[in-house]
Image 1 (cartoon, rainbow over the protein chains, first blue to last red):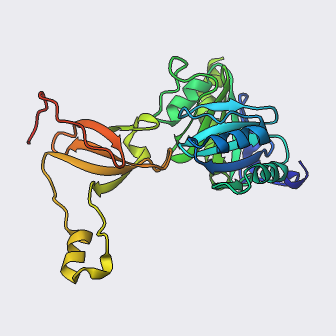
Image 2 (cartoon, rainbow over the protein chains, first blue to last red; image 1 turned 120 degrees about the horizontal axis):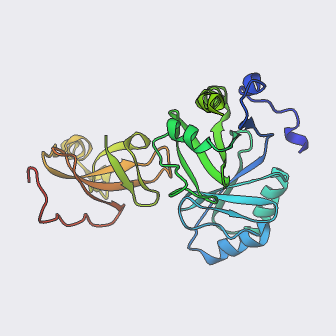
Image 3 (cartoon, each protein chain N blue to C red; image 1 turned 90 degrees about the vertical axis):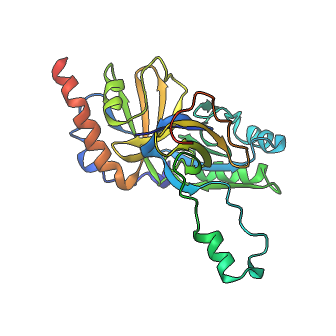
Amino acid sequence: MAETEFWITPAAAIASAFPDGLTELSPRAQVNLRGDAEDASFMTAVKTATGIDLPETPNKAATGKEFKALWLSPDEWLLVGEGEAATLVQNLEGALKGQHFAVNNLSANRTIFELSGPHCHHALMKSSEVDFHPRVFAPGDCLQTLIAKAQAIVEQVEEDRFHIYVRSSFSRYVGAWLAEALAEYRLAD
Amino acid sequence: MLNIDCPWCGKRHETEFRYGGEAHIARPEDPAKLEDTEWAEFLFMRTNTKGYFAERWLHSHGCRRWFNVFRNTVTHEIVGSYKMGEKPPKLPKSAGGTK
């Protein structure tokens, strides 16, 4: 993506020292979408523009072709993908013309950490009060909570692989925290 | 610490929420017609209940929705939570604490 090619976050300064199982992903398009989930014409228009059936069940993610949608609140979703954010915004605005909605390109708002490996659940459980045990939190689930007291969106993309979205200004702190959280398991292996 | 049941996100830890004071206080229909004392009554006067109390909470670090919680301010027992505009749940017969 041309527009994010030179983007850098505070976490980049320490990313080279991250242990196995923790990486900062390259910037992704992140577009915030708001609208009435009970309005069929809104849902159809979004489906036409993105191919995604927006999740109405709280704390679930839904995947489309180029983008996925994370449930944020009853009328709010975050569309994330590797495509162009500007094009997505344009498509959505075109498809939703005349309706009551809001689309905002928030790509620079959050950076994404990928936490993976057999101990990623444990590292998360140390960092949050939410239960991330595989028994209750499965791939396709996402939620907003505090990770080490910093607001974050946590999404499980597949078994033993999480994406953690934190505000860029918190990224160095959260990155350092997660690196520290993983350290003890590296010794155990 | 409280485990609060957000009507959308489910049970979460108290640290994710903000407290919003007493619930079910309706804003006056026409504030311009009120006397200062009546406006102050609406703005500042609260019941300060000891016992079962309907209060507002905001899931500030989650879905950012306001909702109501029916809680015992003495024992911290939470009877239930419900969305804005809904009626508070009935007290269970077994409910303890000060009524």
